[in-house]
Structure formats: structure tokens, C-alpha cells
Length: 462
Image (tube, rainbow, N blue to C red):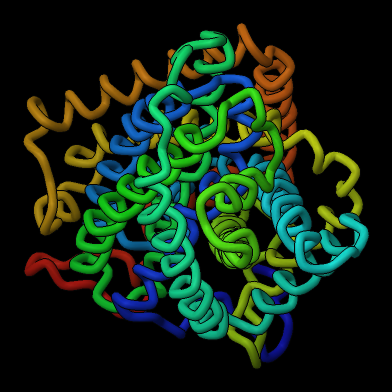
């Protein structure tokens, strides 16, 4: 890359172990939907939200499978971009870093809104001010570095689990089965809820984006993914079942409805405990949003398809600070859009699942394009059995998500298609500013430290 500042590099050297990775993963995945989305979604979809979260776990299972297979074979930073560009096609891979800013900004706005709602239970402070405070905190922490993020995440993760158990265990005994009828008050809202609830499961993509910063990634990635989805699915179903079983769905519709439900069966302090958990949950989500997405921008910059500054690593903090700024600063200007929480969640889910569909195609091509990686992966499937089923299943689910979104929120689909068109124009522009052959070669090959030798080991240098 050209234009690299003195004292800066484009390689990350810090790493985290299995406990820190599990806290990052699970804390990110079980946060927003548990405390922010269920209320607004249940207010329209009713008790069927319990079934919606079960159905949303189906595409989530495909995502986990793709991440486990690819992350085990090719552990790299910015994994999703690398997998699609190397294994599907450069342009489709480019869509990932080009669309990521929109997804990151939407994610930050959704979770910051939830933070404001729950914090106001403790303090009578304007919501806008609280949103700005959280955005500033997350930007600062992610500039400081990965190890600090992991430490902060672990603290909030422990508090989050404690709060969830405080809500679920006594709440299960307070359920009124009459609240589960009618189960399907609105089929359209139910379908939209399935799409929206896929968003929280995107936390499982964290591992493939941090590949080169994880200790022993080939072993850690599949193990943590398996543990993580089991923990997340259990908490999700239990918590939503309690919410719609304790409070009639006609009384739901707010981002802070879990606190309302807690006040029905816990002592006076119950509402405040759940509100504290909501704050923990929101922090664990926004805490990792910039962390994950900045690595993808960094990797695309390494290939020359994005400006070189995005791959620079801060000489003191060892973070891609320019990439973090691109993702963390614009949300300060977009705060007025934060109230569109369901629409933002649907956009995040649809954009992300579309990317994973192209990732599934890449997974199918992996044995042909990088046979050594596939052969040496500790976790893999037979190509014409399990692998084919995984790819076809992902395609079917992606198509269903697009149909539901275009029927219920057509503007989301139109915006996404329009953004892809803009991406193509910029992609051609960037190719025109570089040596096309060299750029194409970089976007279809792996760096030296990502290759494997004949014995299954990884080269350590470029």
C-alpha cells in the first residue's frame, strides 16, 4: 500500500484467548434483541414472537456453520470480505466493506436507542444526550484497542448473564398461558419479526472477522461457535417466552418492555435490575460493532480496493484507527433516525444474510480454489453431501427473507439494491485508479501469513 504513515503498519499483533472470544461473541449476540427488539416486535406480532425467534435461528444456524467451516479453514481478519472476494468473485466481495458502514451505523443507532431507553429509568436525562454519550464511549474504547474491548466486554457479559437469569427463572413461574392467545394476531408482522430477529444472531460473524487476532483460531473458532449458539438460543427462547407470557402483547411496544414485565413478578428493585441488564446488553453490542467492522475495512484496504489509510494501524494502540473513525463518527449525525428501530433491524438482517449467501457460494468453491486449506481444516463437510445441503439451505432462506422484506418493508429492499448499484460504480472507479491486474490478483489470493504449507502449518511471513 502507498501512503503509509511513518511508524504505522498494516498488521495486527495482539490476540485474545478462548474465554475472551466467548465473552465477545455471546455478549454481542444476546444483547440487542433480548433487551431492545422484543417489545416493539411483540407489540405487533404477539405471542408468535416465540416461534419467530425459533425460525430466525434457522438462518443463524447456517451462518454459524459457514463461519465454523470457513473460519476453521481460513482464519483471517475481515473474514467475510476475504471469503467472498477469494471464493465467489471480487465485486461481490467488495460489497461487504462497501455496505458495512451502513450496517454499522444502523447497528449503533439501534443499540444506542435501547441504551437511552433503559438509562432513563435511572436518570431523567434527554435520550439524545444519552445516545451521544454512548457513541462517544464506544468510539474511544475501540480506538484504544482490542484487549481493552475484551476486558470491558467480559465485565458487562457477566452482569448481563446474571440479569437474564434474574428475569427468566422467577418469570417462568409467573407466566399466564392465557396471554399466549391469540398466538398469531398478525401474520405479516410475524414474518417481519423473523427477519428482524436474525439481526442479533449476527454476533456469530465476529469470529471470522477477528481471525488473525484469536489464539489458535483453527481450534477456537469452531469450538466457540458451537458453545455460543447453544447459549444464545437458550436465553433467547426463554426470555421471549417469559415476556409474552407475563404481559399481554397489546400492552407491549416499547424498547424498555422487559423492565415493564419484570415489575409484574419481581419486587420493586426488579425493574431496575433489568434496566441495568439492558445497559450491559447494549454496551456489549456496540462495544463489538466497531471492533468487527473496522477489521473488514482494514482488510479491503490492504487489497487496494479501498483507500490505503483504512489499513493503517495506530503505532501505540495497535488498532485500525482510521477505519474505526469511518464507522464511529457518522452516527453522531444520524441520531435523528434512531427511532426507526424495526426498519433498521430489518435492513441489517437482510443485508447481512445476503452477504452470507455469497459466502455460502464461496464455501462451495473452497475445495477447488484452496484445496490445501480445505484439506487441513479440522472441521469440514463432504462436498456433495453436507456442503451442498448447507449452500442450498442458505439460498432458500435468503430468498424467503427477500420476499418477506419486499412485501412488508419494500423500501428496505429498494435501498439495498440501489446501494449495490452505487457500489458497482465506485468499484469500477477504484479499479481505474489502480493497476487492475495487480488489484484483481490481490483480491483473489491470500497473503503470505494466511497460506498453509503441505503439513497443515501456516507461514508466518509475507
